[in-house]
Length: 447
Ligand code: PFF
Image 1 (tube, helix red, strand yellow):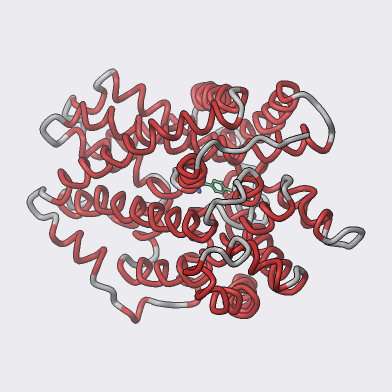
Image 2 (cartoon, rainbow, N blue to C red; image 1 turned 30 degrees about the horizontal axis):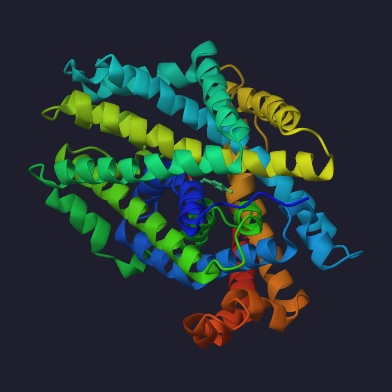
């Protein structure tokens, strides 16, 4: 059977960027910057993105296009009968796990979009009041579960539209809109009186703050943000046409993803400093701090709507990509219909998500290795499964696949001259630097 392809190169780019750009950029990156010391974290992050995450992204897309199938069977197909097939299971199970808790935060952004639409942030509420509103929302039982359900239903609706119609059309309209919105908020934020201190915090690194822990956190964030180590980009790679330039698409994705993260930080941190708030707020940063900013700026009510709409759209395009891996597996491996597959993935992720959502309230007493259910899943994926998946992918590409095949994919059979010139260096990064560096950082998580 002929697999579906994205219609255009732009379509692939939009889908890859859509997967990469999400809550990871607008919610996770700014709070990680705050927790891990500002500019020093950003400095390490940028280096790791280009030296490690990008070669891993190349690897995933190469394996996907070469094997022409989804993450589950790709390894089996390229290395038949070997233990590599177990890698495939990791590549399908991990995205299902991630989309389960991702959709809980997606649900939070729906609730906040709803709050913004009813102009709840414009009534001059104090910082403490907004904090209380946030806490009572996430610890309650039903409302977050309802929003989590709505978010997953929206994701399923896009998935049912099919690869071309759903993901491509959705992404093409929404991503540029999202970009403009975040820029607009950043402009507002950096022009607030007292915002300069926030810019210094973001862009003047204090190198003494770079520790192994900061490097590990930055790498985990890089994987999460670029959607690598998961089989997501591998699946998109399998939808990529022969003529597409893998390196160019991947590099654009990384650059766009980085720009989003930086602009999101410029939208958030200067405001945090201008209002004398705490940058080390943690995961609540976007939801607790920004409403305060919106409540205290001209036209804040409208900016709030735009922002939470943007957050929702970014979250949706990413969750669609996570969801798609499981669906592609059920369709191609288990020969189920796309519709049935979608509802099966929906049911599983919904159930796990409900547990995650309840872990902020009713189930907060349950601890797994000292973490709540939600934190456990987040840590399990960012600190363990993603580095593991990424490590396996680069080892597979650098050591198991034939070098000539890898270079062939990277250069489209030698026709892409620019890529051909870089291919030796990239191959070195994939074969040597990436595995060694991931291993070191991975092991540092153990200590
Ligand atoms: N990259 C997405 C984000 O930054 O929000 C989240 C994500 C999507 C992570 C897909 C992992 C993934 F495979």
